[in-house]
Length: 182
Image (cartoon, rainbow, N blue to C red):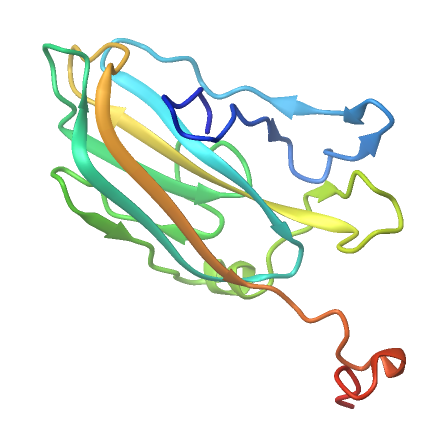
């Protein structure tokens, strides 16, 4: 989550600049900050780290209750699915704006299909020599808008990422009989 979530066992996440998130003994070297909130435009979202080369099969944004600041309710939530904080088109998927309590799902078009079938190499594993060596960072940015909306105090949004990862044992004769498929 970009911000601390109330009573949900998640933590505020760091968003890394793709392929510059190389780990050192003190952690990845380059992080990026989301665009600051402004009256009428609020940014929230979630960051996932999945094994590099995974296949994204679906991204779902469920809006149970539109965010509100107590007096103004959001009139639009625009999701962007990318490997970085995005406020325009996403690298991995396109989603329509959500304007009511509903489920939004991703569509994959053009080069997004290529990237979704084999996610990009973004952040190196903190444990050198361990698999996976690299992770793909999937960031779902939510641009929440209404003319005078300020910091939301309530609302319900859930983001789900479905993916399939590569089997690192396929073709590896040391894992016979399970991994020798060549």
